[in-house]
Image (cartoon, one colour):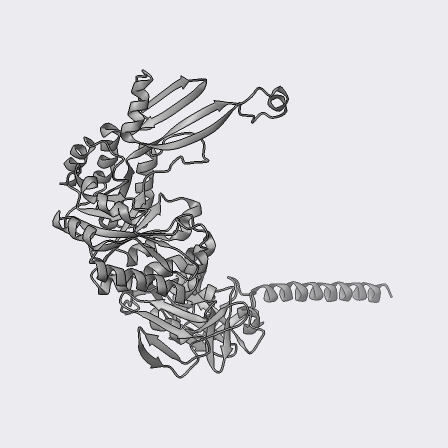
Length: 577
C-alpha cells in the first residue's frame, strides 16, 4: 500500500513537471514564433469610405485624403497649396482656378473640362475643378500638369502614392520571402508579404530591423537579415521646375520717388530734378485705387515722361492703394475681374504715356488680401514682361506679421523688390529713429533670405520725425492708479533733412552721434515741450549706402525727392557709380 502511494505521488510530480515543461516550452515557442496577424490596410491607411483615398507623399501618410469623383482623384485647394504647389489660386468669388506660369495665365472655370492658356482653349477628359460651399477640389492629373511630382493610384484600399522628393534613395532587394510589419518585432501585425527579389526603398537602417517602403505606399519594418545589400539609386527624373527671367539693368538703380497728388505737380519736374546727381529712375505717384471695381485715378503726363527721358532718366509710375480710404483693397484684389481691370489700365497707360516701369506700393494690407495680392503681382508681371515694362514692388522690412506679402514669390515674377528701409518708428508708435542702421541692416538680411541680391533695392528716407512730448495736466489719481501712466502726450511730424537740422540749430543744440542708431540725435526743451530728433545727413546716409553695397544690392531708392539736402547727392553718387 505504501509502495502504491509513493508511485502515485511520483506520477503526480512527473505529470506536474511535464505540464510545467509544456507551459514553459509553449511560452518559449510563443515568444519566438512570428505573429501571423495581418493588419487591415483600410485601417492602416485610414480609408473608411469608397469615395475617399489616402494620400501618401514621399512615404508619409497625409492627414488629408483625396476625394474620388467619376474615377478621378481630387485634392482640396488648401492641401494643394500647402503640400504641392502654392502657385494655384482659387477665386471663390468668381469660381475660377488660376495658375500662373512664367509666361502665361492659365484659367479653368468650376465644373468645366476646359481651360485657357491666356486665350487659347484646351480640353481635358475630366472635370478640372469643382467646388462646394467650403472649398475647391482640383483634379490630381491637372495638378501634375503644373507641378514637379509623379503619382500612382492604387485600390483596395484607394490611395494616391505621390513623389515630390527626387533626391537619390537607397534601394534594397529582398533575399527571402518574408513580411513587412507595422513595427520592428515579430509580434507586430503584418502589413505586406514580400517575395524574393522584391525591390524596397530603405528609409532607415537598424540593428535587426530596417524601415522600408513599398512602391504602393506601405511603410513598415523588415528583418534586415532577409535583405540584400542596399544600393544608392537615382529616380532618373528630369526636373520640371519653372524658370523665371527678369528685366534687370546693367547699372545700379539710383531711384527717387516724386510725390504727385494733383496734375499741376507734374509741372515741377524740372525743379525737382535740378539738384539731383546720378538719378537714373524716377517714380511719380501717378495712380491709385479709386473705387472697389479697381478703377484707377490717373495723374500721368506724357510731357513729364518725355522730359525725364531727355535727361536720361527712366520713369517707373507708382500705383498705390492708400489715397482713397473708401476703397477696400481686399475687395479689389480678391476678384479676378477687378484685378484684371487694374492691370489693363496700368498697361494701357504705360503704352500711352511711354513710361518704362511700374512700381507697386500696396501697403497696410490685411492677411485676407494676401493671396489676391500675390496673384495681382503675378498677373501684372506677365503683361509687363510682354511689353518690356520693368515691374518693381515696394515691401516693408520683413516681420512675422507681413510674411503673407510673400517676397519670395514676388521675386519670381517681379523684376525688383524694394525694401522700405524706414518707418521703424511711425505715427502712433513709440518715439525713436525712422531708420536706424540696425533696422536697415536687419531688413536687408531678412529680405535676402527670400530675394536675390541682384533684384533687391534698398529704400532710404530723405526725412525724419520730430517727436514732441507735451506734458499733461497733473493727475495724481491717474499716476497712482497705473504703473504705465505716461505724464505727457506724444506726437510726431515728418520733416525734411534741412528742416530738422534748422530746428536743432535754431535752438542752439549740438547733436550727439549715436553709434547704435547710426545717426545724430538731438533733444531740447522749448515752451515746456520736449523735442527729440534722430537726424539724417550724409554720414547716416553713407552707412545705409555701405550696407547696400556690402550685400551687392541692385541699388537704392529714396523717399522722397524734394526733402533731401542737395549735398547728399555727392555721397549717393560715390556708391551708385
